[in-house]
Amino acid sequence: MENIPVIKLGLVAVSRDCFPIALSEKRRAAIAAKLADKKVNFVEIKTTVENENDMLKAVEELKANECNAACVFLGNFGPETPETLVAKYFDGPVMFVAAAEGDGDMINGRGDAYCGMLNCSYNLGMRHLKGYIPEYPVGNAEELADKIAEFFPIARVIVGLKNLKIITFGPRPQDFFACNAPIKGLYELGIEIEENSELDLLVSYKEHAGDKRIPAVCEDMAKEMGEGKYQYDTLLYAFNEIYARHGYKFETGSRCYNWFTQMPWYRANESESSDNHHESYSQCSSIENYNRDLIVDVRKEMREKKTTNPKGKGMPTPPAANINKPRGFEFVTLKANQKLPVFSAPSTSAYRANNGKALVNTSGAVYALGYDGGWMLMLYEANYAGQYRVGYINTAKMKGQLPALGQLKWEWDKAQLTAGTNITDDPALTGRSLAFLPEGTWVTYLSTMFNNTGWDYIETTINGQTARGFIPSGYLSNIEPASEEEIDGDG
Image 1 (spheres, helix red, strand yellow):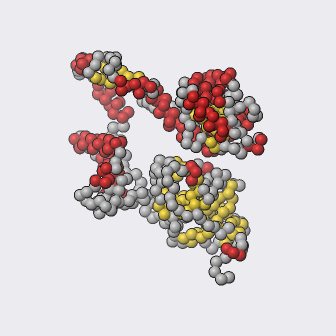
Image 2: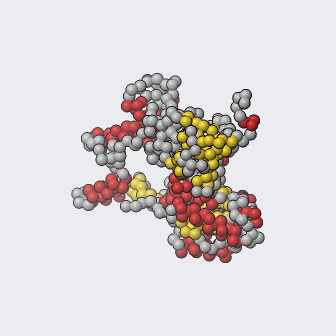
Image 3: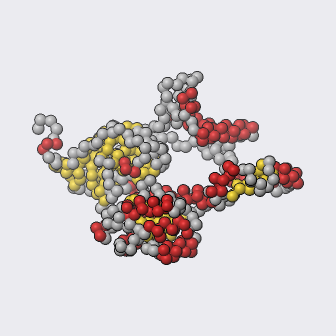
């Protein structure tokens, strides 16, 4: 049984009548193209909202397309009243985003959508309307498509809660809520509550004694709840990871020590001893403590059933043991659970690996070298084990404290390839090719980096886009220094 809402989002553009409506429509179409690349479930609403009549038409179009979530896009300053009334008349979660300046070719790309977003948020507050505005609500088509994709799980939770009904059993007769004030917050979320009498439940239970349907229902419930999903030993490591994340110091040579010391994020708290783990225990959140107790109960039940659940999920693939990162890249701790776009050069228009979808998850291992302006150059493990990637992330999109790193200085010398070779963004492990550069290609030499061999770090173009990557040292000649001052030594 599928018990999770499926979100279908409608993309609605708005336009203030003192701007060309085509500006919003053109920008909406660009976002729609990026969303199509991401294969998200959305509809481009063709009614562009300039006034309240347009707003009502757009809401009807959302309903006709069976949308249960919406994104209102300010392609320019936008009409404050009609755009915010979408949140009033549309029965579903609504997100608000706006176009960045310069994103388009009309009126030099001006649309004043940034100012419009400020007014939009203020208007929503005055009307006591609920709308989701991301932390960075202004961007170009690709950036806003990323934000809209991130809205899907949020919308899914809102829709799910709104249609949720909680059935409970308590000491009161059915539907006797007069003295149950704590449920008020649930009602405000749109959740329905049905409290049944425990005595009525007992009567019903006795009436169904020996009912032949019960075993099949129990089996179906077990499948839905995911019972038996993990192997017995896997749960042991899951239990210990709760503490490992807080620096729990394992006994040297133990299986948990051997497992977690492979993890780049693991740092043992040296102030702990084998009989004193107070610091690790005290840092656990209430959710982590709940998960710990749940794992203990599940493992206990498995022991009672005398099963290790061999068909369940086993241990994940550990990080590649033979990662050979270039010197200077050091492990950094970033705020977890961020999924950030990765570009091969410090620009959103630069080449992006993985078919333009390269992302780093900051909950994994990240190694950084330094900053290139407002971009951090880092190495990280791709979504699947066995491949690493070097690239840039925009620090303006990063949450939490940035690592203390210096600014990078490049040579910026013109150079020519003496033979054809592949350019890679993975000098650490696989050397997987991004593109083949033919003999005679002119490139910009930036630096040389070393692991167990030498790699020349260069800038070139791939598919017409600026790209940076690594080629084996020894393929460059005719290096032309950018200026005599940049030559080291005495000449």
